[in-house]
Length: 368
Image (tube, rainbow, N blue to C red; front, top):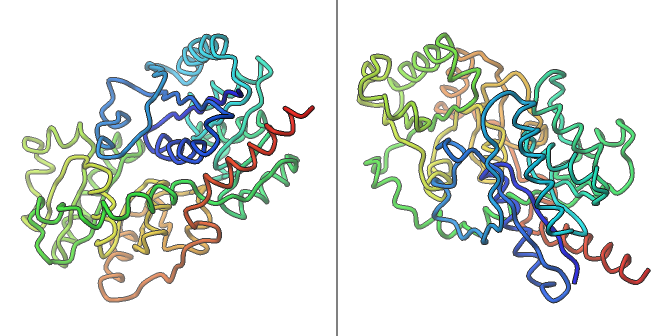
Protein backbone atom coordinates (compact mmCIF):
# COMPACT_ATOMS: atom_id res chain seq x y z
CA UNK A 1 0.00 0.00 0.00
CA UNK A 2 1.24 3.47 -0.95
CA UNK A 3 1.25 6.35 1.52
CA UNK A 4 0.47 10.00 0.80
CA UNK A 5 0.76 12.85 3.33
CA UNK A 6 -1.04 16.16 2.77
CA UNK A 7 0.08 19.30 4.61
CA UNK A 8 -2.22 22.28 5.14
CA UNK A 9 -0.88 25.46 6.72
CA UNK A 10 -4.21 27.19 7.40
CA UNK A 11 -7.85 26.23 7.98
CA UNK A 12 -8.72 27.46 4.46
CA UNK A 13 -6.17 25.09 2.99
CA UNK A 14 -7.37 22.32 5.27
CA UNK A 15 -10.77 22.76 3.59
CA UNK A 16 -9.08 22.14 0.24
CA UNK A 17 -7.15 19.14 1.54
CA UNK A 18 -10.38 17.68 2.97
CA UNK A 19 -11.75 17.47 -0.59
CA UNK A 20 -8.60 15.59 -1.62
CA UNK A 21 -9.15 13.20 1.29
CA UNK A 22 -12.71 12.49 0.15
CA UNK A 23 -11.44 11.76 -3.38
CA UNK A 24 -8.81 9.34 -2.03
CA UNK A 25 -11.50 7.24 -0.31
CA UNK A 26 -12.25 5.60 -3.66
CA UNK A 27 -8.69 4.19 -3.54
CA UNK A 28 -8.46 3.43 0.18
CA UNK A 29 -7.33 -0.18 -0.50
CA UNK A 30 -4.36 1.10 -2.51
CA UNK A 31 -3.42 4.35 -0.73
CA UNK A 32 -3.28 5.51 2.85
CA UNK A 33 -3.87 9.26 3.00
CA UNK A 34 -2.59 11.12 6.07
CA UNK A 35 -3.38 14.76 6.88
CA UNK A 36 -1.12 17.16 8.78
CA UNK A 37 -2.20 20.63 9.90
CA UNK A 38 0.44 23.25 10.62
CA UNK A 39 -0.92 26.24 12.53
CA UNK A 40 -0.64 28.74 15.34
CA UNK A 41 -2.34 27.10 18.30
CA UNK A 42 -2.66 30.35 20.29
CA UNK A 43 -3.93 32.40 17.35
CA UNK A 44 -7.73 32.46 17.12
CA UNK A 45 -7.59 33.66 13.51
CA UNK A 46 -5.78 30.54 12.31
CA UNK A 47 -7.41 28.04 14.65
CA UNK A 48 -10.11 25.64 13.54
CA UNK A 49 -12.80 27.16 15.78
CA UNK A 50 -14.54 28.96 12.91
CA UNK A 51 -14.61 25.72 10.95
CA UNK A 52 -16.06 23.44 13.60
CA UNK A 53 -19.32 23.18 11.60
CA UNK A 54 -17.50 21.38 8.78
CA UNK A 55 -17.02 17.67 8.41
CA UNK A 56 -13.23 17.75 8.46
CA UNK A 57 -11.40 14.42 8.21
CA UNK A 58 -9.24 13.37 11.13
CA UNK A 59 -5.89 15.16 11.28
CA UNK A 60 -3.12 12.70 12.11
CA UNK A 61 -0.56 15.33 13.06
CA UNK A 62 -0.72 18.90 14.32
CA UNK A 63 2.43 20.96 13.88
CA UNK A 64 2.63 24.11 16.06
CA UNK A 65 4.47 26.59 13.87
CA UNK A 66 5.36 28.92 16.71
CA UNK A 67 5.95 32.65 16.48
CA UNK A 68 8.93 34.74 15.47
CA UNK A 69 10.62 35.69 12.23
CA UNK A 70 9.90 33.99 8.91
CA UNK A 71 13.20 32.13 9.25
CA UNK A 72 12.38 30.95 12.76
CA UNK A 73 8.93 29.68 11.80
CA UNK A 74 10.30 27.95 8.71
CA UNK A 75 13.14 26.29 10.62
CA UNK A 76 10.90 25.18 13.50
CA UNK A 77 8.40 23.64 11.07
CA UNK A 78 11.14 21.88 9.08
CA UNK A 79 12.43 20.09 12.18
CA UNK A 80 8.96 18.79 13.05
CA UNK A 81 8.12 17.82 9.46
CA UNK A 82 11.42 15.95 9.14
CA UNK A 83 10.50 13.72 12.08
CA UNK A 84 7.03 12.98 10.65
CA UNK A 85 8.42 12.12 7.22
CA UNK A 86 11.16 9.96 8.72
CA UNK A 87 8.59 8.01 10.76
CA UNK A 88 5.91 7.70 8.05
CA UNK A 89 8.15 7.33 4.95
CA UNK A 90 5.49 8.57 2.49
CA UNK A 91 5.65 7.98 -1.26
CA UNK A 92 4.33 11.47 -1.98
CA UNK A 93 3.38 14.67 -0.17
CA UNK A 94 0.70 17.17 -1.20
CA UNK A 95 0.99 20.85 -0.31
CA UNK A 96 -1.67 23.54 -0.20
CA UNK A 97 -1.05 27.15 0.72
CA UNK A 98 1.59 29.87 0.54
CA UNK A 99 2.60 30.11 4.19
CA UNK A 100 6.11 29.69 5.63
CA UNK A 101 5.01 26.26 6.88
CA UNK A 102 4.10 25.24 3.31
CA UNK A 103 7.59 26.07 2.08
CA UNK A 104 9.12 24.36 5.11
CA UNK A 105 7.29 21.13 4.26
CA UNK A 106 8.42 21.39 0.64
CA UNK A 107 12.07 21.97 1.47
CA UNK A 108 12.15 19.11 3.96
CA UNK A 109 10.46 16.63 1.62
CA UNK A 110 12.72 17.65 -1.26
CA UNK A 111 15.85 17.14 0.86
CA UNK A 112 14.51 13.67 1.76
CA UNK A 113 13.87 12.93 -1.96
CA UNK A 114 10.11 12.60 -1.55
CA UNK A 115 8.03 13.70 -4.58
CA UNK A 116 5.82 16.75 -4.04
CA UNK A 117 2.49 17.84 -5.53
CA UNK A 118 1.22 21.41 -5.17
CA UNK A 119 -2.44 22.42 -5.22
CA UNK A 120 -3.03 25.93 -6.62
CA UNK A 121 0.42 25.98 -8.20
CA UNK A 122 1.54 28.86 -10.38
CA UNK A 123 -0.42 31.68 -8.72
CA UNK A 124 1.53 34.94 -8.71
CA UNK A 125 0.84 38.44 -7.39
CA UNK A 126 4.14 39.85 -8.77
CA UNK A 127 5.02 41.42 -5.40
CA UNK A 128 8.75 40.69 -5.47
CA UNK A 129 9.50 40.95 -1.75
CA UNK A 130 6.19 39.66 -0.43
CA UNK A 131 6.85 36.62 1.79
CA UNK A 132 3.83 34.70 0.49
CA UNK A 133 4.95 35.32 -3.11
CA UNK A 134 8.42 34.01 -2.28
CA UNK A 135 6.85 30.92 -0.71
CA UNK A 136 4.66 30.34 -3.79
CA UNK A 137 7.58 30.54 -6.21
CA UNK A 138 9.99 28.39 -4.21
CA UNK A 139 7.35 25.76 -3.44
CA UNK A 140 6.59 25.40 -7.15
CA UNK A 141 10.31 25.00 -7.92
CA UNK A 142 10.46 22.04 -5.51
CA UNK A 143 7.39 20.24 -6.89
CA UNK A 144 7.10 17.38 -9.36
CA UNK A 145 3.35 17.89 -9.91
CA UNK A 146 1.67 21.25 -10.42
CA UNK A 147 -2.12 21.37 -10.16
CA UNK A 148 -3.46 24.72 -11.32
CA UNK A 149 -6.85 26.36 -10.92
CA UNK A 150 -6.68 29.07 -13.60
CA UNK A 151 -4.99 29.82 -16.91
CA UNK A 152 -2.75 32.58 -15.52
CA UNK A 153 -1.09 29.98 -13.29
CA UNK A 154 -0.26 27.75 -16.27
CA UNK A 155 1.30 30.71 -18.08
CA UNK A 156 3.36 31.68 -15.02
CA UNK A 157 4.81 28.19 -14.61
CA UNK A 158 5.75 27.94 -18.28
CA UNK A 159 7.38 31.38 -18.28
CA UNK A 160 9.40 30.33 -15.22
CA UNK A 161 10.56 27.15 -16.97
CA UNK A 162 8.42 24.68 -15.01
CA UNK A 163 6.55 23.30 -18.00
CA UNK A 164 6.46 19.62 -17.01
CA UNK A 165 3.61 17.97 -15.12
CA UNK A 166 1.28 20.97 -15.21
CA UNK A 167 -2.34 19.89 -14.84
CA UNK A 168 -5.33 22.22 -15.15
CA UNK A 169 -7.66 20.61 -12.61
CA UNK A 170 -9.86 23.42 -11.27
CA UNK A 171 -10.32 24.81 -7.77
CA UNK A 172 -10.65 22.43 -4.82
CA UNK A 173 -12.27 25.17 -2.72
CA UNK A 174 -15.21 25.05 -5.11
CA UNK A 175 -15.53 21.33 -4.36
CA UNK A 176 -16.02 22.26 -0.71
CA UNK A 177 -18.48 25.04 -1.52
CA UNK A 178 -20.65 22.58 -3.43
CA UNK A 179 -20.37 20.08 -0.59
CA UNK A 180 -21.60 22.60 2.00
CA UNK A 181 -24.09 24.42 -0.23
CA UNK A 182 -27.18 23.01 1.47
CA UNK A 183 -25.75 23.90 4.91
CA UNK A 184 -25.21 27.45 3.68
CA UNK A 185 -28.82 27.66 2.47
CA UNK A 186 -30.08 26.43 5.85
CA UNK A 187 -28.00 28.96 7.83
CA UNK A 188 -29.85 31.09 10.40
CA UNK A 189 -27.18 33.79 10.40
CA UNK A 190 -29.61 36.52 9.25
CA UNK A 191 -31.84 35.85 12.24
CA UNK A 192 -28.86 35.53 14.57
CA UNK A 193 -27.60 38.98 13.53
CA UNK A 194 -31.14 40.41 13.47
CA UNK A 195 -30.83 41.44 9.83
CA UNK A 196 -34.34 40.50 8.81
CA UNK A 197 -34.82 40.98 5.07
CA UNK A 198 -32.86 44.22 4.76
CA UNK A 199 -29.99 44.61 2.31
CA UNK A 200 -26.47 44.85 3.66
CA UNK A 201 -22.81 45.14 2.69
CA UNK A 202 -20.39 42.71 4.32
CA UNK A 203 -16.95 44.05 5.30
CA UNK A 204 -14.06 41.94 6.57
CA UNK A 205 -10.34 42.70 6.82
CA UNK A 206 -7.48 40.62 8.19
CA UNK A 207 -4.24 41.70 6.47
CA UNK A 208 -1.60 43.10 8.82
CA UNK A 209 -1.05 46.18 6.65
CA UNK A 210 -4.65 47.13 7.41
CA UNK A 211 -5.11 45.91 10.98
CA UNK A 212 -1.76 47.07 12.36
CA UNK A 213 -1.86 50.45 10.64
CA UNK A 214 -3.77 53.02 12.68
CA UNK A 215 -4.13 55.14 9.54
CA UNK A 216 -5.61 52.30 7.48
CA UNK A 217 -7.90 51.15 10.29
CA UNK A 218 -9.18 54.69 10.67
CA UNK A 219 -9.78 54.89 6.91
CA UNK A 220 -11.72 51.60 7.06
CA UNK A 221 -13.85 52.91 9.92
CA UNK A 222 -14.56 56.18 8.10
CA UNK A 223 -15.53 54.30 4.93
CA UNK A 224 -17.92 52.07 6.85
CA UNK A 225 -19.52 55.05 8.59
CA UNK A 226 -20.10 56.76 5.21
CA UNK A 227 -21.57 53.61 3.65
CA UNK A 228 -23.84 53.02 6.67
CA UNK A 229 -25.81 56.12 5.69
CA UNK A 230 -26.90 54.26 2.56
CA UNK A 231 -27.10 50.62 3.66
CA UNK A 232 -26.75 48.28 6.64
CA UNK A 233 -23.11 47.25 7.12
CA UNK A 234 -22.12 43.93 8.67
CA UNK A 235 -18.51 44.27 9.78
CA UNK A 236 -16.89 40.94 10.63
CA UNK A 237 -13.99 41.74 12.94
CA UNK A 238 -10.98 39.54 13.74
CA UNK A 239 -11.31 38.02 17.20
CA UNK A 240 -8.81 40.35 18.89
CA UNK A 241 -10.54 43.46 17.53
CA UNK A 242 -14.00 42.20 18.38
CA UNK A 243 -12.91 41.63 21.97
CA UNK A 244 -12.08 45.35 22.39
CA UNK A 245 -14.90 46.73 20.23
CA UNK A 246 -17.09 47.51 23.25
CA UNK A 247 -14.45 49.81 24.74
CA UNK A 248 -12.39 51.10 21.80
CA UNK A 249 -13.52 54.65 20.96
CA UNK A 250 -13.11 53.96 17.26
CA UNK A 251 -15.86 51.34 17.35
CA UNK A 252 -18.02 53.08 19.96
CA UNK A 253 -18.71 55.92 17.50
CA UNK A 254 -20.13 53.57 14.87
CA UNK A 255 -23.81 54.27 14.01
CA UNK A 256 -26.62 51.78 14.62
CA UNK A 257 -26.61 50.79 10.95
CA UNK A 258 -23.29 49.00 11.54
CA UNK A 259 -23.52 45.48 12.95
CA UNK A 260 -20.29 44.15 14.42
CA UNK A 261 -19.70 40.42 14.61
CA UNK A 262 -16.90 38.10 15.63
CA UNK A 263 -15.62 35.35 13.25
CA UNK A 264 -18.52 33.05 12.34
CA UNK A 265 -18.86 29.36 11.52
CA UNK A 266 -17.83 28.86 7.91
CA UNK A 267 -21.25 28.02 6.47
CA UNK A 268 -22.75 31.09 8.18
CA UNK A 269 -20.00 33.21 6.67
CA UNK A 270 -20.74 31.75 3.22
CA UNK A 271 -24.42 32.58 3.69
CA UNK A 272 -23.55 36.18 4.61
CA UNK A 273 -21.42 36.53 1.46
CA UNK A 274 -24.07 34.94 -0.73
CA UNK A 275 -26.82 37.33 0.43
CA UNK A 276 -24.70 40.49 0.60
CA UNK A 277 -25.11 43.34 -1.89
CA UNK A 278 -21.31 43.50 -1.90
CA UNK A 279 -18.33 42.21 0.06
CA UNK A 280 -15.45 44.56 0.88
CA UNK A 281 -12.33 42.65 1.88
CA UNK A 282 -8.56 42.28 1.69
CA UNK A 283 -8.68 38.47 1.44
CA UNK A 284 -7.67 36.42 -1.59
CA UNK A 285 -9.67 33.37 -0.55
CA UNK A 286 -12.83 35.47 -0.30
CA UNK A 287 -12.25 36.47 -3.93
CA UNK A 288 -12.54 32.78 -4.84
CA UNK A 289 -15.68 32.27 -2.79
CA UNK A 290 -17.48 35.40 -3.98
CA UNK A 291 -16.70 34.64 -7.61
CA UNK A 292 -18.29 31.20 -7.27
CA UNK A 293 -21.21 32.57 -5.25
CA UNK A 294 -21.78 35.38 -7.76
CA UNK A 295 -21.33 38.06 -5.08
CA UNK A 296 -19.77 41.45 -5.85
CA UNK A 297 -16.30 41.62 -4.27
CA UNK A 298 -14.35 44.84 -3.71
CA UNK A 299 -10.79 43.93 -2.77
CA UNK A 300 -8.65 46.47 -0.92
CA UNK A 301 -5.18 45.32 -1.99
CA UNK A 302 -2.52 46.52 -4.43
CA UNK A 303 -2.03 43.07 -5.90
CA UNK A 304 -3.75 39.71 -6.07
CA UNK A 305 -2.62 36.30 -7.24
CA UNK A 306 -6.24 35.37 -8.04
CA UNK A 307 -6.21 36.94 -11.50
CA UNK A 308 -9.16 34.92 -12.76
CA UNK A 309 -11.46 36.43 -10.13
CA UNK A 310 -10.89 39.81 -11.78
CA UNK A 311 -10.73 38.74 -15.43
CA UNK A 312 -13.70 36.38 -15.26
CA UNK A 313 -15.19 36.71 -11.79
CA UNK A 314 -16.80 39.46 -9.73
CA UNK A 315 -13.69 40.97 -8.08
CA UNK A 316 -12.75 44.65 -8.34
CA UNK A 317 -9.22 45.47 -7.15
CA UNK A 318 -9.03 49.04 -5.79
CA UNK A 319 -5.60 49.14 -4.10
CA UNK A 320 -5.31 50.63 -0.62
CA UNK A 321 -7.79 53.31 -1.64
CA UNK A 322 -10.65 53.20 0.83
CA UNK A 323 -12.43 56.12 -0.79
CA UNK A 324 -12.40 54.22 -4.09
CA UNK A 325 -13.63 51.10 -2.30
CA UNK A 326 -16.53 53.06 -0.79
CA UNK A 327 -17.47 54.51 -4.18
CA UNK A 328 -17.36 51.05 -5.76
CA UNK A 329 -19.76 49.82 -3.06
CA UNK A 330 -22.07 52.77 -3.68
CA UNK A 331 -22.09 51.92 -7.40
CA UNK A 332 -23.17 48.38 -6.54
CA UNK A 333 -26.02 49.76 -4.45
CA UNK A 334 -27.07 51.79 -7.51
CA UNK A 335 -27.15 48.63 -9.60
CA UNK A 336 -23.82 49.14 -11.37
CA UNK A 337 -22.41 45.62 -11.08
CA UNK A 338 -19.23 43.98 -12.33
CA UNK A 339 -20.37 41.18 -14.64
CA UNK A 340 -18.88 37.82 -13.73
CA UNK A 341 -19.21 34.13 -14.26
CA UNK A 342 -17.84 30.94 -12.72
CA UNK A 343 -14.34 30.28 -14.16
CA UNK A 344 -13.54 27.29 -16.31
CA UNK A 345 -13.21 23.98 -14.45
CA UNK A 346 -14.57 25.41 -11.19
CA UNK A 347 -17.15 22.64 -11.25
CA UNK A 348 -16.70 20.75 -7.99
CA UNK A 349 -14.56 17.99 -9.52
CA UNK A 350 -11.05 19.36 -8.98
CA UNK A 351 -10.07 16.99 -6.16
CA UNK A 352 -11.28 14.00 -8.15
CA UNK A 353 -9.13 15.04 -11.12
CA UNK A 354 -6.06 15.59 -8.92
CA UNK A 355 -6.35 12.23 -7.22
CA UNK A 356 -6.98 10.38 -10.51
CA UNK A 357 -3.79 11.89 -11.97
CA UNK A 358 -1.78 10.99 -8.88
CA UNK A 359 -3.19 7.45 -8.82
CA UNK A 360 -2.13 7.06 -12.45
CA UNK A 361 1.41 8.04 -11.47
CA UNK A 362 1.37 5.75 -8.44
CA UNK A 363 0.13 2.80 -10.51
CA UNK A 364 2.82 3.45 -13.11
CA UNK A 365 5.53 3.46 -10.43
CA UNK A 366 4.16 0.24 -8.97
CA UNK A 367 4.31 -1.51 -12.35
CA UNK A 368 7.93 -0.47 -12.76
